[in-house]
Length: 340
Image (cartoon, rainbow, N blue to C red; front, side, top):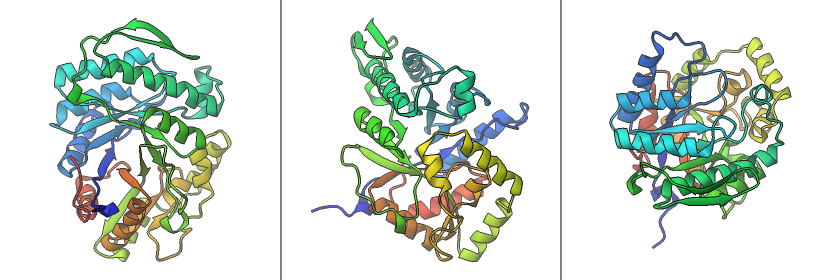
């Protein structure tokens, strides 16, 4: 008998707090707190950002391992920062030291000014071609029992071995931005989960790309017993902000990200007043994903729509407190498949 889409396993990831604007004396404690909250809420993993202006993602991930028992750091990896062998070595080394899994969020670009500063002028689609080679080498080194040889346009390795070897039960999960055709193709080529920045379910009825192994969405959630309570909290957390709107508009002018462009075309409430879909946090440069705001039932209904579209992985925004994650956990308990 075929299983209903909602009966298939769902993976939920939170996001670690950024060091941008943080105090060095308290940031490590904040990382530990968010990681523990996420683990206790049942999240399978926690996304760790990477860009030129924040603390090294691998250092943050090690702090997460030291403050938790099981949650999996999902480390953002940008090819410009390090050789693929170094990534595989870090994964294997942390597995050896902690016997914990590290997963990877493969990113092709980033902030344009960061790329310019690193003298990376590679065009958008070619960055995904490069990312395919980069990911395949990491996958080969992590999974190989012997030596690996790979000849590509951007990377080549010869008789390369991974020591210490990575145990088979600690192989990484791979995610990749899947909002552009190039991103979807790269996810399909590498077997990565294609993560998208969703439109409202009512507006997103396109056919799923069957070449992609799995798909997911990046979305923030504010859910409470009533819609009015949820919206009151949302308005307090993300008030109108003209300066933030200008910062968003400036970022748009310097970005070549397909997802950034597509999301920016969405109105603040594009699906109507009864929909939980909300874009103000994105439009005011407070975060980089849509939000779902409403009663538990409204948010569950919208998430059910995404699940029906084939999405099985949900990457949440940074939680503001432990209580916020408990409300989100209540939403996902409806599906009875929140994975640790």
